[in-house]
Amino acid sequence: MTLQQMKYVIEIAERGSMNEAAKSLFISQPSLSGSIKELEKELGITIFSRNNRGILLTTEGREFLGYARQVLEQYNLMENHYHEKADNEKKFYVSTQHYTFAVEAFSKTLLKAGMDEYDFAIYETRTHEVIENVKNMRSELGILYLNDFNEQILSAELKEYGLIFTELFACDTYAYLSADHPLSGKSSVSIKELEDYPCLSFDQGDKNSFYFAEEVLSTYPYKKLIHVNDRATALNMMKLLNAYTLCSGVICKELNGEGYMAIPLQSDEKMHIGYIKRSDIKLSPIAKSFIKEMKKYG
Image (cartoon, rainbow, N blue to C red; front, side):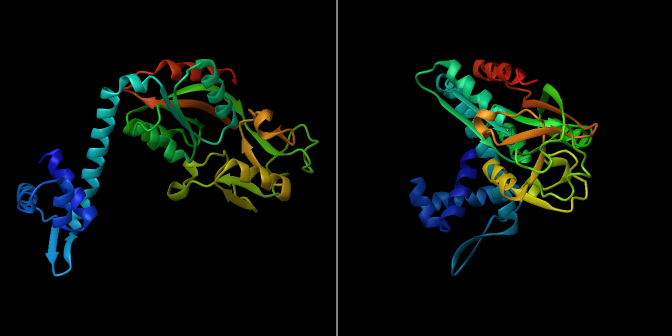
């Protein structure tokens, strides 16, 4: 089995025709068909079935196609990593849970780098996508938190993927809400006092497990719960509905505005915010600079 044969299978599946795939690959149809038959014989499976309507993937073929795409994706990532080192020095990609301080640290890092040319990216996204992006080398670093509740599950997943978590700082839990909220004048609040107000939670999609939640106390039986998928929506809900969310208390007023505040939650819950990286990758100078900026928030 070769990478070329995997490329052939992907092309045929996408074209839905042996003839069209052969044209796209600039080889003869008999050569393409022969290569696929050799692959099927070697693996002992049937990848494509043929009928009057053309060529279709079998169940075994769909499974093989999924593996083939993963292998080629990893191959392309490795090729890009080792063949484009000069360009990679100008690249820095980060994935993070919804933290304004991460956005601010990223921006400061970019400004301090003083580069005339660069290709930077920051993805505010779901917890499992932070992990996936680092695993697949789409991002050099991922920013997330661990606590007593999720640490065992997330640490096991990180270990399985060859990722390392390094703590940046620990913090207490806060209720983040509008400055006009009825509870905004209190020096601290209990989860019981917040019960009559909507709690905002960042949606985790298919991985909507309590362990992947961005907010602590994810198993609490909230009377009113609203799932959102971006920070701007959450801020609007805080203003319009007197909603709140649970957070680290590390707030960037320059980004979120003056109309919001963080009040300590009466809880022993600690958030350990840190970064994840692949164990087999050395950090770039830009990544080290970003980490240095992040540590200032602790």
